[in-house]
Image 1 (cartoon, helix red, strand yellow):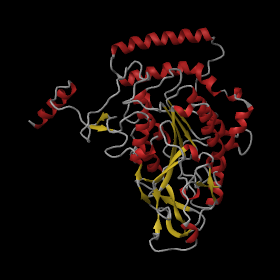
Image 2 (tube, one colour):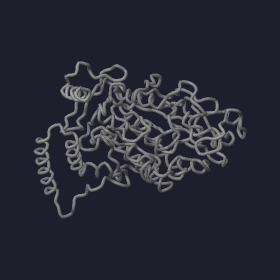
Image 3 (cartoon, helix red, strand yellow):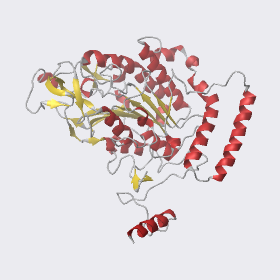
Image 4 (tube, helix red, strand yellow):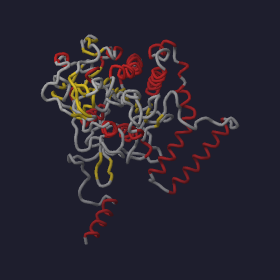
Length: 475
């Protein structure tokens, strides 16, 4: 009788004949986007009107030290070289050392006088246009799980990225380019790889397409022996064959996604070379972003920043730009993970990121793109106020770190929350990653509690069963 009841419940649920409506853990009815399986990228309305219609996520793998960038703590100067009570004897990578003052001088920036360190002088000039969140905390002190948690809402793999959720909910206006582009660092993928921009259990159509200014999407070049006319005829034939095949399997999301990806690839043969051609950008833009000077990595990252702006201009819904890489761990060489010699390794990463990132945000502001684009600058967790036993690096700190928001729907020149006097733990208005992601969805016109996908018996969502919108940062 038990097995029969389970079978009956399954059959009734398939035909929508169960008495109870589907509800989320909060007792709300889910809002499922109405998706045409034949056209999964068509634009869809948000849950409510919002200023932000596109999003640029600048993600820094490796854990940027909040204490050496945006979170000014004078008490670190006072306790420098000491080991006051309460400092743990052992942290993520071993024994802890003494309290260390910031490795770079902090100075007031902009009209607001916000204190930002000399490590990021160009980004310091952005303070009057952004909202800092200084009281973030997370669930893990390990990089792979930290990246997963920030980008997907879960420490485990297999869950959709925030970009996947956004494209699932909203589609995209531009039908010639991917709805979601992941621009990976010139050095390669981040620690969690494609999971950071994957679709998880959502339909495959909503994963990010990864390429950068140095490495365009593969297999888009037309062989020399084929003319444009030959190519067009081939694509038309494939479209007709695909359409006939899809008629035999209506509602097959995986099949529709594969067909849509092939059709998009055909369109990208024309659109991608155009958007990736940076030679038409004026010399002033190249100088502003810094493609003309600095290390090779800095110049390549600067080109990625220009590409990001061009993709936003073209109407791509989600652009995720990575500053840092290395799936096996970089210890400050390939990302921000500075367990030793932070003075050298953080300086190297900042030289790559600072000028191009600031130029990207300023350029978007100048062009009016921030009127409808949300910008997110983020990292997976922070770093400790005391040194490791080696005396030159800071260990992982999941209990306090800083990220910022800018652009559409966000207050300007604002700081929310505080870490404690040492920057050790979130103290005033503690903000979880769930809260931060709920706020991002809200700014994009989506209710994080009602944007769900039914998977394995659960109404799954980006924020799991947690999260509150940080209303104080809303314009």
